[in-house]
Amino acid sequence: MSNLYPSLREALVAGRPVAAATLIAGPGPLGAKLLIWPDGHTEGTLGDPALEARVRLTALPLLARGESRVIDDAELGVSIFIESFVPPPVLFMVGGVHIAVALAALAKIVGFRTVVVDARPAFASAARFAHVDELVVAWPDEALAGRLDVRSCVAVLTHDPKLDDPALRVALRSSARYIGALGSPKTHAKRLERLSAEGFDAATLARIKGPIGLPIGAKSAEEIAVSILAQMVQVQRGA
Image (cartoon, rainbow, N blue to C red; front, side, top):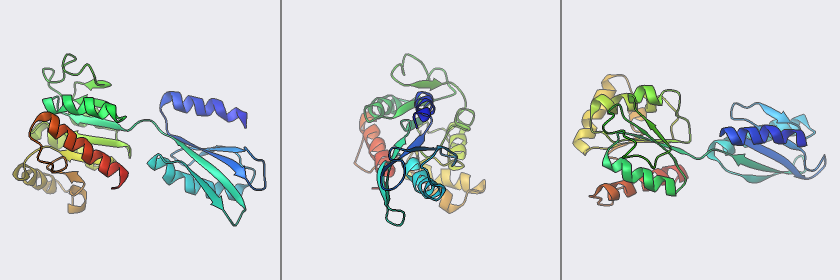
Protein backbone atom coordinates (compact mmCIF):
# COMPACT_ATOMS: atom_id res chain seq x y z
CA MET A 1 0.00 0.00 0.00
CA SER A 2 2.70 2.47 0.96
CA ASN A 3 4.28 2.26 -2.48
CA LEU A 4 1.37 4.36 -3.77
CA TYR A 5 2.33 7.41 -1.75
CA PRO A 6 5.20 8.47 -4.04
CA SER A 7 2.76 8.42 -6.97
CA LEU A 8 0.21 10.40 -4.99
CA ARG A 9 2.81 12.92 -3.87
CA GLU A 10 4.11 13.30 -7.43
CA ALA A 11 0.58 14.05 -8.67
CA LEU A 12 -0.01 16.63 -5.95
CA VAL A 13 3.28 18.40 -6.61
CA ALA A 14 2.62 18.44 -10.37
CA GLY A 15 -0.97 19.63 -9.90
CA ARG A 16 -2.49 16.59 -11.60
CA PRO A 17 -5.92 15.42 -10.40
CA VAL A 18 -6.17 11.96 -8.85
CA ALA A 19 -8.59 10.11 -6.58
CA ALA A 20 -7.53 7.79 -3.77
CA ALA A 21 -9.94 5.01 -2.76
CA THR A 22 -9.36 3.39 0.63
CA LEU A 23 -11.10 0.27 1.98
CA ILE A 24 -12.37 1.30 5.43
CA ALA A 25 -14.87 -1.47 6.30
CA GLY A 26 -15.85 -4.96 5.23
CA PRO A 27 -13.99 -8.07 4.14
CA GLY A 28 -10.61 -7.66 2.57
CA PRO A 29 -7.42 -5.84 3.53
CA LEU A 30 -8.54 -2.76 5.46
CA GLY A 31 -6.55 0.28 4.45
CA ALA A 32 -5.95 -1.06 0.95
CA LYS A 33 -5.70 1.78 -1.55
CA LEU A 34 -6.42 2.32 -5.21
CA LEU A 35 -5.44 5.46 -7.12
CA ILE A 36 -7.76 6.46 -9.98
CA TRP A 37 -6.65 8.91 -12.67
CA PRO A 38 -8.94 11.04 -14.87
CA ASP A 39 -8.27 8.87 -17.94
CA GLY A 40 -9.52 5.82 -16.01
CA HIS A 41 -6.29 4.00 -15.38
CA THR A 42 -5.59 2.84 -11.84
CA GLU A 43 -2.67 2.03 -9.58
CA GLY A 44 -2.75 -0.22 -6.51
CA THR A 45 -5.39 -2.74 -5.47
CA LEU A 46 -8.36 -3.19 -3.14
CA GLY A 47 -7.98 -6.96 -3.26
CA ASP A 48 -11.02 -7.63 -5.48
CA PRO A 49 -11.16 -6.85 -9.23
CA ALA A 50 -14.97 -6.58 -9.17
CA LEU A 51 -14.80 -4.05 -6.35
CA GLU A 52 -12.08 -2.10 -8.13
CA ALA A 53 -14.20 -1.87 -11.29
CA ARG A 54 -17.15 -0.48 -9.29
CA VAL A 55 -14.98 1.97 -7.39
CA ARG A 56 -13.41 3.22 -10.61
CA LEU A 57 -16.82 3.99 -12.12
CA THR A 58 -17.91 5.77 -8.96
CA ALA A 59 -14.69 7.70 -8.47
CA LEU A 60 -14.40 9.24 -11.93
CA PRO A 61 -17.42 11.58 -11.69
CA LEU A 62 -16.44 12.49 -8.12
CA LEU A 63 -12.96 13.36 -9.31
CA ALA A 64 -14.35 15.48 -12.15
CA ARG A 65 -16.31 17.51 -9.57
CA GLY A 66 -13.52 17.56 -7.00
CA GLU A 67 -15.69 15.78 -4.41
CA SER A 68 -14.82 13.25 -1.69
CA ARG A 69 -17.28 10.75 -0.25
CA VAL A 70 -17.72 7.46 1.65
CA ILE A 71 -19.34 4.87 -0.60
CA ASP A 72 -21.19 1.90 0.93
CA ASP A 73 -21.57 -1.13 -1.32
CA ALA A 74 -24.24 -3.31 0.31
CA GLU A 75 -23.86 -6.10 -2.24
CA LEU A 76 -20.16 -6.56 -1.54
CA GLY A 77 -20.47 -5.50 2.11
CA VAL A 78 -17.73 -2.90 2.02
CA SER A 79 -17.25 0.80 2.64
CA ILE A 80 -14.81 2.81 0.58
CA PHE A 81 -13.59 6.33 1.22
CA ILE A 82 -12.96 8.10 -2.08
CA GLU A 83 -10.87 11.24 -1.70
CA SER A 84 -10.40 13.56 -4.67
CA PHE A 85 -7.20 15.54 -5.00
CA VAL A 86 -7.59 18.25 -7.61
CA PRO A 87 -5.63 21.40 -8.44
CA PRO A 88 -7.44 24.70 -7.87
CA PRO A 89 -9.82 25.82 -10.62
CA VAL A 90 -8.26 28.16 -13.15
CA LEU A 91 -9.80 31.44 -14.26
CA PHE A 92 -8.62 32.55 -17.70
CA MET A 93 -9.33 36.26 -18.25
CA VAL A 94 -9.07 37.31 -21.88
CA GLY A 95 -8.29 40.99 -21.96
CA GLY A 96 -6.02 42.92 -19.61
CA VAL A 97 -8.71 45.49 -18.85
CA HIS A 98 -9.56 47.15 -15.53
CA ILE A 99 -12.31 44.61 -14.80
CA ALA A 100 -9.68 41.87 -15.05
CA VAL A 101 -7.53 43.64 -12.46
CA ALA A 102 -10.38 43.54 -9.94
CA LEU A 103 -11.64 40.09 -10.97
CA ALA A 104 -8.21 38.50 -10.58
CA ALA A 105 -7.86 39.89 -7.06
CA LEU A 106 -11.28 38.61 -5.99
CA ALA A 107 -10.85 35.24 -7.68
CA LYS A 108 -7.63 34.53 -5.81
CA ILE A 109 -9.42 35.12 -2.50
CA VAL A 110 -11.88 32.30 -3.22
CA GLY A 111 -9.17 29.89 -4.44
CA PHE A 112 -8.85 30.32 -8.20
CA ARG A 113 -5.56 30.21 -10.03
CA THR A 114 -5.60 33.32 -12.20
CA VAL A 115 -4.35 33.73 -15.77
CA VAL A 116 -4.62 36.91 -17.85
CA VAL A 117 -4.31 36.62 -21.63
CA ASP A 118 -3.92 39.56 -24.01
CA ALA A 119 -2.00 40.03 -27.24
CA ARG A 120 -1.50 43.72 -26.45
CA PRO A 121 1.60 44.27 -24.26
CA ALA A 122 0.30 47.63 -23.09
CA PHE A 123 -2.68 45.89 -21.48
CA ALA A 124 -0.98 42.66 -20.40
CA SER A 125 1.72 44.37 -18.38
CA ALA A 126 3.42 43.09 -15.26
CA ALA A 127 2.83 46.46 -13.61
CA ARG A 128 -0.95 46.06 -13.95
CA PHE A 129 -1.08 42.35 -13.13
CA ALA A 130 1.61 41.67 -10.57
CA HIS A 131 -1.03 39.88 -8.48
CA VAL A 132 -1.96 37.18 -11.03
CA ASP A 133 -0.46 33.69 -11.22
CA GLU A 134 0.30 33.88 -14.93
CA LEU A 135 0.39 36.63 -17.53
CA VAL A 136 0.34 35.52 -21.18
CA VAL A 137 1.06 37.98 -23.98
CA ALA A 138 -0.36 36.08 -26.95
CA TRP A 139 -3.45 35.77 -29.08
CA PRO A 140 -6.20 34.06 -27.07
CA ASP A 141 -6.66 31.08 -29.39
CA GLU A 142 -2.94 30.29 -29.11
CA ALA A 143 -2.82 30.87 -25.35
CA LEU A 144 -5.93 28.81 -24.52
CA ALA A 145 -5.43 25.88 -26.89
CA GLY A 146 -5.10 22.61 -24.97
CA ARG A 147 -5.36 24.29 -21.55
CA LEU A 148 -9.09 24.20 -20.81
CA ASP A 149 -10.77 21.39 -18.88
CA VAL A 150 -13.81 20.84 -16.66
CA ARG A 151 -12.31 22.98 -13.88
CA SER A 152 -11.58 25.94 -16.14
CA CYS A 153 -13.50 29.22 -16.24
CA VAL A 154 -13.12 31.64 -19.13
CA ALA A 155 -14.07 35.32 -18.88
CA VAL A 156 -13.81 37.18 -22.19
CA LEU A 157 -13.54 40.89 -21.40
CA THR A 158 -12.05 42.83 -24.33
CA HIS A 159 -15.12 44.07 -26.27
CA ASP A 160 -13.02 43.42 -29.38
CA PRO A 161 -14.20 40.62 -31.72
CA LYS A 162 -10.62 40.15 -32.95
CA LEU A 163 -9.75 38.92 -29.46
CA ASP A 164 -13.11 37.79 -28.10
CA ASP A 165 -14.17 35.52 -30.96
CA PRO A 166 -10.95 33.44 -31.16
CA ALA A 167 -11.11 32.91 -27.40
CA LEU A 168 -14.74 31.82 -27.55
CA ARG A 169 -14.07 29.40 -30.40
CA VAL A 170 -11.48 27.58 -28.29
CA ALA A 171 -13.62 27.70 -25.14
CA LEU A 172 -16.75 26.37 -26.86
CA ARG A 173 -14.81 23.41 -28.26
CA SER A 174 -13.49 22.56 -24.79
CA SER A 175 -15.03 21.14 -21.61
CA ALA A 176 -14.62 24.45 -19.74
CA ARG A 177 -17.04 24.68 -16.82
CA TYR A 178 -17.83 28.37 -17.31
CA ILE A 179 -17.70 30.67 -20.34
CA GLY A 180 -18.73 34.31 -20.06
CA ALA A 181 -18.40 37.28 -22.39
CA LEU A 182 -18.63 40.98 -21.58
CA GLY A 183 -20.93 43.19 -23.63
CA SER A 184 -24.45 44.54 -23.91
CA PRO A 185 -27.34 42.34 -25.06
CA LYS A 186 -26.99 43.93 -28.52
CA THR A 187 -23.26 43.19 -28.62
CA HIS A 188 -23.85 39.63 -27.47
CA ALA A 189 -26.54 39.07 -30.11
CA LYS A 190 -24.10 40.10 -32.84
CA ARG A 191 -21.47 37.84 -31.30
CA LEU A 192 -23.86 34.88 -31.42
CA GLU A 193 -24.69 35.64 -35.05
CA ARG A 194 -21.01 35.54 -35.99
CA LEU A 195 -20.37 32.28 -34.16
CA SER A 196 -23.53 30.71 -35.52
CA ALA A 197 -22.40 31.56 -39.05
CA GLU A 198 -19.20 29.65 -38.29
CA GLY A 199 -21.19 26.51 -37.50
CA PHE A 200 -21.74 26.59 -33.73
CA ASP A 201 -25.23 25.33 -32.90
CA ALA A 202 -27.69 26.92 -30.49
CA ALA A 203 -27.03 24.47 -27.67
CA THR A 204 -23.30 25.13 -27.82
CA LEU A 205 -23.74 28.91 -27.97
CA ALA A 206 -26.05 28.74 -24.95
CA ARG A 207 -22.98 27.86 -22.87
CA ILE A 208 -21.85 31.48 -23.13
CA LYS A 209 -23.03 33.64 -20.24
CA GLY A 210 -23.71 36.91 -21.98
CA PRO A 211 -23.91 39.59 -20.89
CA ILE A 212 -21.45 38.20 -18.37
CA GLY A 213 -22.21 38.19 -14.63
CA LEU A 214 -25.29 38.03 -12.45
CA PRO A 215 -27.74 40.92 -12.93
CA ILE A 216 -27.04 42.80 -9.70
CA GLY A 217 -27.04 46.28 -11.18
CA ALA A 218 -23.24 46.50 -11.20
CA LYS A 219 -21.73 49.71 -12.56
CA SER A 220 -18.08 50.00 -11.51
CA ALA A 221 -15.34 47.61 -12.62
CA GLU A 222 -15.17 46.22 -9.10
CA GLU A 223 -18.93 45.63 -8.94
CA ILE A 224 -18.88 43.94 -12.35
CA ALA A 225 -16.05 41.72 -11.11
CA VAL A 226 -18.21 40.72 -8.12
CA SER A 227 -21.11 39.82 -10.44
CA ILE A 228 -18.83 37.71 -12.66
CA LEU A 229 -17.25 35.85 -9.76
CA ALA A 230 -20.66 35.18 -8.21
CA GLN A 231 -21.88 33.71 -11.50
CA MET A 232 -18.81 31.50 -11.78
CA VAL A 233 -19.34 30.15 -8.28
CA GLN A 234 -23.02 29.59 -9.05
CA VAL A 235 -22.15 27.53 -12.14
CA GLN A 236 -19.41 25.59 -10.36
CA ARG A 237 -21.71 24.66 -7.48
CA GLY A 238 -24.62 23.82 -9.76
CA ALA A 239 -26.83 26.31 -7.91
